[in-house]
Amino acid sequence: MELFLLSFAITLAIIINFLFKYFFAKPKEKIPLAPGTFGWPIIGETIQFLISLYYGLVHEFVQKRTNKYNSNVFKTSLLGQNVAVFSGPAANKFIFTNGNKLLIGYRPPSVQKLFPSTSFVPIEHDTKRAQNVISYFLNSKNVDKLISTMDNMSHFHLENHWKGKNEVIVYDLVKLFTFSLSIRAFTGIEDSDKILNFYEKFKIFTQGLLAMDINFPGTTFYKAMKAGIELRKEMKAIIEQRREELLENPNFPKVDVLTQLLDEQDGDGKYMTEVEISDKVFGFIIGSYDTTATTITLTMKYLQEKPQFFNEIIEEQNEISRQMKPRKVLCWDDIQKMRKTWSFVNEVLRNKPVVQGIFREAIEDITYEDFVIPKGWKIYLSFGATQKNDEYFPNPNKFDPSIFEGKGELVPYTSVPFGGGHRMCPGKEFARLLILVFLHNLLKNFRWKAKVPSEKILYPFFLLAIPTDGYPVNLYNV
Picture (tube, rainbow, N blue to C red):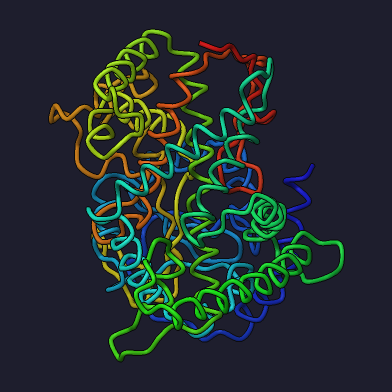
């Protein structure tokens, strides 16, 4: 019923736009579009797509049409937009390597309104600056300090929120941890009360990212806008304080992303505005804590369900602990030894993508496989349709981490949970470090058993994979 109401609301919001186009748009010259159908008038295939998205079955939606049209690209109509749907390693490579030459990230109206700087900062500049800042943050001089911070915060979190508990809701606790770590790394905030205050407001703020942009009291988007205003006021105070510290001490260490952003200049030597800085920080936090928390939660779920791999990973982590002695804090070299653990995480992400796909927008007419994707069309790239395809993963429903262990069997661009090429997620390495450091500390101290073995994993708000009950477990100390 909720899905139907959402689809009905979307239909009402776009109907006027469609009718206008239908009656007043000039006929265009015929061009070789990809095969497919635009579905029902006005609605298109939106309802089928949203249902499959909610239940984590977009790969089936895509694969069914890919087989029907015998093409890895087909056209459809989703959310009131003409869309070309892509899948397959060639499509992944095409989308990621063409970067800003032919495509830009598609920002829904809700995102544009929640992030004001999107109205005056081109998305390609946004991405480039993000990569510059994260690259500095994760360079060889700073990475061990970051790992040390992650290690200490993991230990503190587990000691204070997990130890002594017989039962915990994993997703809730892990999300609190990843948020706390992210906000400290990106803003330098350490005060626990401030972090909790930000956390509660961010939960409301992020729920509006893919909501209908109806700014009316009581709506999800209205609440998100209010939370955003409050967050920006607090962020403004933090920025002003940091600027004063930098003026007093020009050699102030750039130990967090905020300090680096204040010093970042574009090609013309211009510094970012306060609005841009706030948007960047919020974007970094949202991009790191939610997806990372989901990945850790799903990894724990799969570890408990796959005892044969669990034992191998415990052995790897125990060996790392033995080699560390007498050193107590993890470092970069330790992370590099967690090969089986990271292969397991990658196989989890292949089986259950945290995000099922991404939207892009064509900034000019694009030719792909003899078809033309007209300028202005949206492009949806499906990850799962490739990762669940037996052409690239024999027996794709079999859980097999060994395919990620560097034996040369993995076809390039078949598994791309963090993007690829020039469009690799700037925070991939940050996420990898955080996931592995937390899992190391977790496995060193606890074992667990699911309280709801048959718990479903759905995509509420059509965004991230989340266990419906938050993955409640019975907890045991090692």
